[in-house]
Picture 1: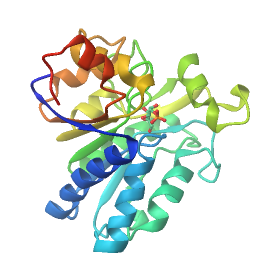
Picture 2: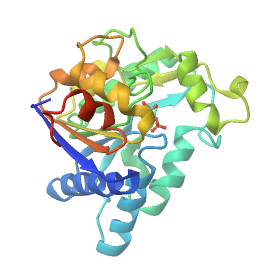
Picture 3: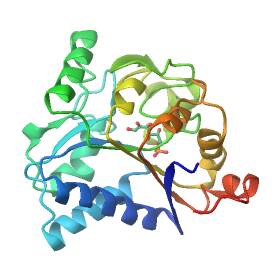
Picture 4: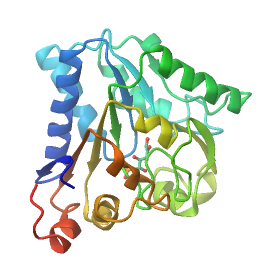
Length: 253
Ligand code: F6R
């Protein structure tokens, strides 16, 4: 864990504030930076805080470019559970970003495989990701790179595991409605980001966070590959750090 910078916070709201600070610093230092963005419950307080900073302190997103990690296959951009809809309602609708500078995988693309290649090309054309924001799944996935995915893949079509579908069921009316496939940036894509910001909150994530940073580097725990990355900042609340602090009393955040 010594190669990682770790911020311990009291709760998810403070994790959101610190993470937003880190993202804001990147935007201020490089106004046309390329941010890799995530969806899910974890980043909601981060986007809320970034919107507040835009409104209060004129944090300027006019030149910022963004690429999202993933999107469900079969959901249109307007679907209330699509990640397109999430990004608009939680973030893009409230800041001065130019939507031409944002990319989210298209889960309705006619040729999904060609789309994935174009997505990779876009990231390369934009000069690579400066900062990649990540949440982590209960099974250790990052993006939708599920356990047993190989580490080297780029943006691709993937089947969602039952564990992930069940975890995300809370956003849908029933498990049947949860899509079975997604487009995701690959681990290979994520690892090219110049900086990684992994945010993890809640007691449910305590065990997987410990396995991610203290267990073997193993495609069965996709996030464990981050042990190979040179520039990882972890922002975690006390609950999420519980297993690490119990098993590794020498560790201090
Ligand atoms: C979302 C994503 C996923 C989530 C993960 C955690 O774009 O890529 O890997 O980060 O499933 O989700 P939450 O934050 O809802 O626990």
